[in-house]
Amino acid sequence: MMLHTGSRVRGVRRSHVGRATGMVLPAVVAVGAAIAALTGAWFEAALTEARRTRALSDRLIAFHAADAALAVCVTRLQHGTARYLGPTSRTEPGAWRRASALAMPDAIEPFAAWPMAAQPPRCLIEAWDLRRTAGDRAYLVTARGVGSHASTTVWLQMQILMREGRIVARRWRRVAAAG
Image 1 (tube, helix red, strand yellow):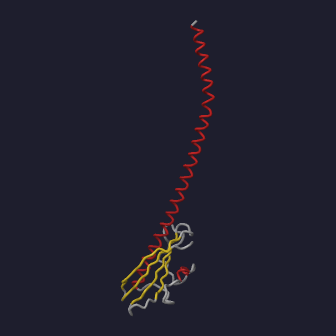
Image 2 (cartoon, rainbow, N blue to C red):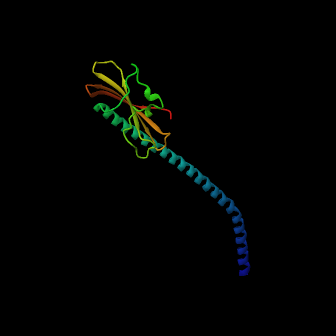
Image 3 (cartoon, rainbow, N blue to C red):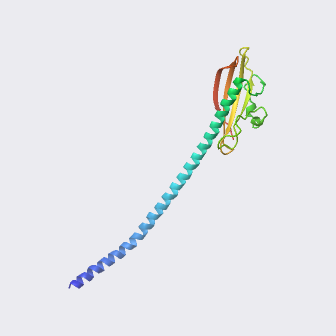
């Protein structure tokens, strides 16, 4: 009699295990699909963040290159050793707006190269006829820095007013330029 009870218990267990096996497979497939979808989403998020980090790094390289070039060019201007374009009118100088302006011979390349940049930074100094006081001279200094890709550029400008070889006023600005 014990054998009979034991076999019945075994039979019940077998049928219960058989039903559970049929239910586990779809659950495992659903969990596997969810994990695969999450992995894909995490991978996309990681790629997006890596692109954003590279773009920021590229902009920082270009900004620091332009900032350093601007500082060197303003110092050279103050010491009287910088080349510059003469004033063409009483309005704000605009030679820097031409794409080829920084390739002109009057443009200054203060550094032979810049770390991790595709091109060294350059600057252009333009005299500005403000006609304020007899001894005043005004200049617009434009610097361009390039990131690790030539398509990433940052343009910075400083408006300088000098009197008797000293800078008496300066205004800094970032230029939003296409390209």
